[in-house]
Image 1: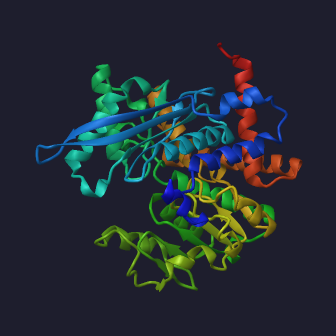
Image 2: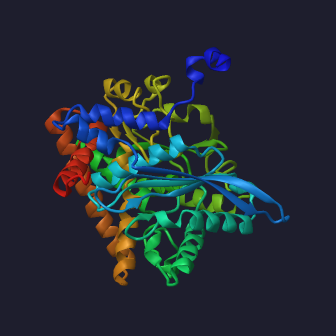
Image 3: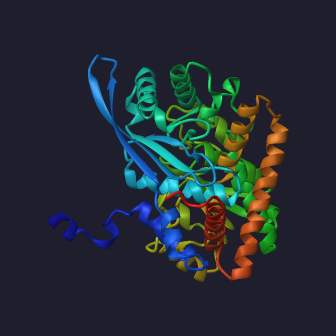
Length: 427
């Protein structure tokens, strides 16, 4: 208690889940929906915590804590990634599961929201230890999962290989191969073409639509991208493809700057071959202070790293005209009114980065029918779903004179309530 009292206000940990609850409450207040129904859909329906004993390579056992949260299954089975990270907590997983519910509703696909995580440091685990950890998690929580129940996908520090282990473990228990229990698998195991780049592509589709709405030209626009993992690198790559000059890029190790535009394709190749998989040292740009990356004078800022990057403490320093939320929750609720006052056009995460779950839906559909689409068809379907979603949210925003985040939550909440009312409540 003494330590808590001595904390400065800017040192108090931000509850990501409370941020989602604030976003929900602000949007729900704009809708004519009874409070008891809102309470029914606001909170996670189930949260599971499991202790996982794993045999290490030296023969010893180590205990890990795993989580799976199902926020909603009103519109369909739970859908959401599985992340491996030392800082995974129930608070974070509940928040991410909630965002998945609203994200799936915004793009109007028949999924609810779920999320999972294991508190671990993957960099300190061997491939064999990671496999045993994944399989133990799958087996211990197997009753939660299934193509009609809850469908995981890769997330932070998990991959196609993680999903292959998960699918195999689930299939062994079911005594037949169940490819549709996860998405983000290797293509040879039933994965979808176009899945890897889907989130970043979706970000850029919404940016393109925002530019058109604001009367801006992509070929005259500049951008900064925070994060150069799968989402950040593809976002930068596709921004460049539509003519945007990407002048600033940062990752966990540092940042780069080139006023003439960074050659993103060359940077991707450099990172793939560098020792620590970092952008640092890339010869095609000069080093830049990572602490100032969010505050550079560009047209488009794409935070594609972690949550809570733009808060009420730094929002007034943002100079970009458009913020495209490639990450989940990079802007806190307290920062939104500051950005709105500055007339910054924020494309919210539950719309902006929904390309990944959209193509995960495509993968699930393909697995279930045993018929697979070409990459061109996947891209065309993603183009349609993201463009439609952007225009649906924009229409709500214009009709109600609210910013895009408020509009996205209003649209998502209404869609979940509409389905719930048709189904009725079994009580």
